[in-house]
Amino acid sequence: MNQEVNKKQRIRFFIMNVSAFAVIFLLLGFIILQLLQNLAYQQTDHSLEQMQNNTHLIEMEIARYEQDDLFFVQEKASDAEEKFMHKGDQMPNRFNTQVILWSKDGEILNKAIIGGRFTQLSQLSLDTSKLTKIQTISLTDDTMENPLTFHSITFKNPTTSEKVAYIQVVTNTNQISESMGTFETILIVCMVIFWLISIAISYYLSKKNMQPILSAWQRQQEFVENASHELRTPLTIIQNSLQRLFTKPDHTIMDESETIAQALNETRRLTSLTADLLTIARSDSNQLLIEATTFDPYPFIEQLAAPFKEIATLDAKHFILENFAKTPVYADQKKIHQVLVILLDNALKYTQAGDEIILQSELSKDAWLIEVKNSGPSISDEQKQRIFERFYREDTSRAKATGGYGLGLTIAKQIVTEHKGKLTVRDRIPKGVIFQVKLPLHPK
Image (cartoon, rainbow, N blue to C red; front, side, top):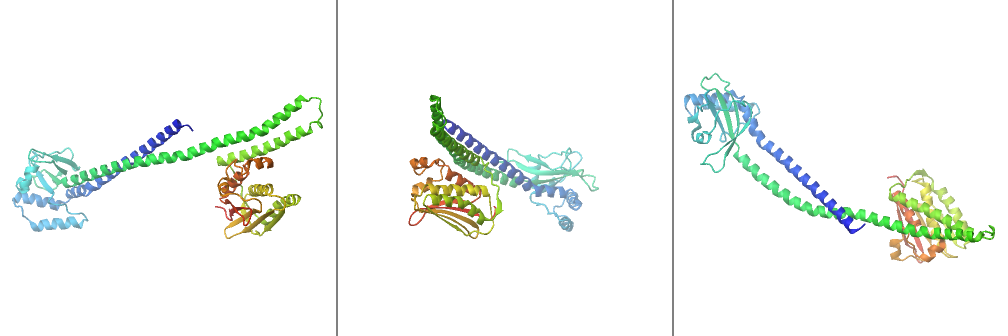
């Protein structure tokens, strides 16, 4: 992937992440402010709504106005508060709450009872268009540094008093408004700080998100290049063989049997390579299907090992089978058979006459362990790190001589991984290599 495409993709991921964080923070801030605002004024508004239904308090206020006595009917006031509390409602804060009595003409009747607060409330005017509804009122003049804010409710006088036509209850909400303003400032500052942090996180995530894409692209490039290289050799041999036949049209099949056999041999190798490439491609696209069943591993290993015993005997190699697993296991027989064929085939290819090959099968507490051991040449630590890479060959010249393409161990690793198992390689003491397949006994 060229640098320009890589840069554009990273910028795209970065913008997407920053935008996502910004939207999340804005929605979160909006929701928090709305909830807090509703909760902050909820108790105040609830108290105002309850006061219009409390006739005892209203009668007390009207009586205080008619008698022009601030401390009139204390017993009646106590009784009103007791009944208000008996209903389960909280008594409003009388320091912040003021009851205003209005005449039909829109005149405040209880100015004397209101006292010093009347100066602040003198700007009020009677509004009967929104009776029994909570309203927000803001009052200001030249003597005030900050405007006074109130929540107010106005309703008709429920008593028989003829002078009082309407009653308005106002509660000062400056303290709540100031607290809300402070909270909004803190919230905005925190959102900005965390959004700046999210920019750094977005940059890191955009870089991190590109890594699997670049890795997959790199693997694809390597796969195409290596596959093209490996396919070119057998195709070239087949082409040359066929061209040679055209140059000798009078020859019989027996005369050109060597050339034909060479072409057929390369065709078989090409078919095998194509099948391996298809298996790897399916695994890369998560299409490598595992059809697991429960089966007895003992006869499975016995049958699988039989032909390899014969091949080893013909090559003057010692083949030893240690078959201890006799409890049913859960796996894909065909795929595990393919894995073991790859491992045993490699063991036969890379050992000399007189060397030892051991196939061991046993059960642990939670796994089926299969080991293919040989007393052939060891593998260096560097090669152990790369041996499962596709198209990697420990010895290129020897691999070509044995017909290998460096795909067998890659396919074996992928099959074992699809079984949620592990395929590992380690040294055998004093000489040789051990490949271990570890498969879970129970499906996950």
